[in-house]
Image 1 (cartoon, rainbow, N blue to C red):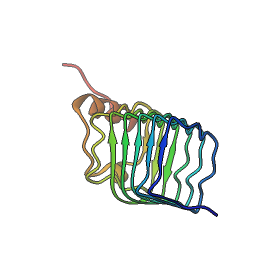
Image 2: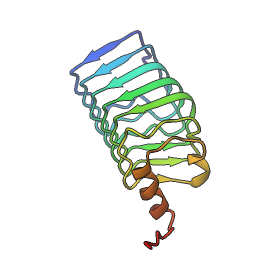
Image 3: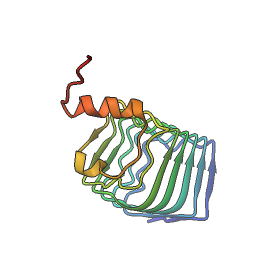
Length: 148
């Protein structure tokens, strides 16, 4: 049982690592590969994932405080029942990500790719998106746009 405190990871391949039920505090992951990694029931605080490949990651039931994903590929990742305080997605790939029972109020998704995102309208309430993303989400919720 290892916790990560004040660690910096540069150019590491941590794919398929299981960091479940751990603490990640004041850490940086730069240019790392974390494909398929598990962060289930993990406490993540004051941490940055920068320019990482994190597709197929699982963050279910995690507690997050001040976490930033910057220019990171999170395609097909899962964020179910996340308890968070300040999570940022800056220029990330969130294609096909799942966000269920994870409130995205005040979360800015406007610079990220969200095609195929799976999320309820209640969880999206209060988040920030751009006009193009609004069109995608309207269609995802089964609403048709009528051209005049």
